[in-house]
Length: 266
Image (cartoon, rainbow, N blue to C red; front, side, top):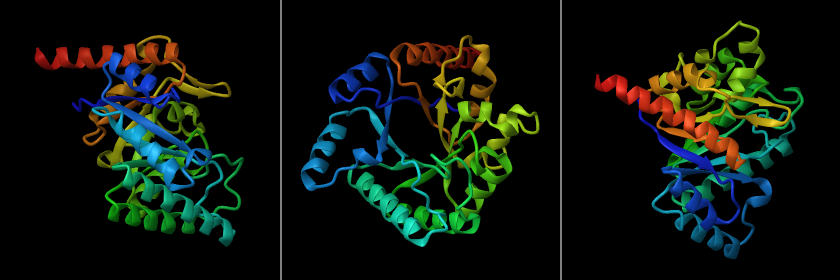
């Protein structure tokens, strides 16, 4: 099975606190989320950011763009071009920071997929993937709890047709209508392209209050087995931003990994 690097989000704004927390937890990485307001606007701000990221060593860092309404496939050409520039600028920044992976979204922050073109989404996501590849970065598309990426058959098509990689969010997959209705299983998000999934976001499920930790090992065990079977999914982010919930989930993940190691050794 795949034994992944375990990571936490940048759940503390103070980098020294974040690094100490991650090291004390025995983690290997930080999944650094950028919001639009976090992006540096000048060289001084970028230099400060660069020093902060460099200071996280020896922890590895991957990146996650939380940019609601920044939509490559927007039917409005001005909005689509603005989204393209925002995402390209973010990839250029991440490249300068030494990053090699970035997670993006389709339909984030929208109430419906109206106003978004499927064809333009595919072509522009493909162009973004190619642009990022030239910068040494792998673009990874995350499945959301609703919309196109919440439908396994469409998520598979977006990965395959655009050539991008995947970030499998098992909490989103758990609650999406495709799975909750029984029409699909969580595994259907990964089985068609198992080698395309490079990252995982781990928690039990997403509700209106946010991400919910598992109450017991069995809540996420089957989904962790799925992740462990994916040959390239070597980055597991325990995606909870409250310390108690994070540690609770991390305990279940570690229990699963230890049981897997024990079973392999027998």
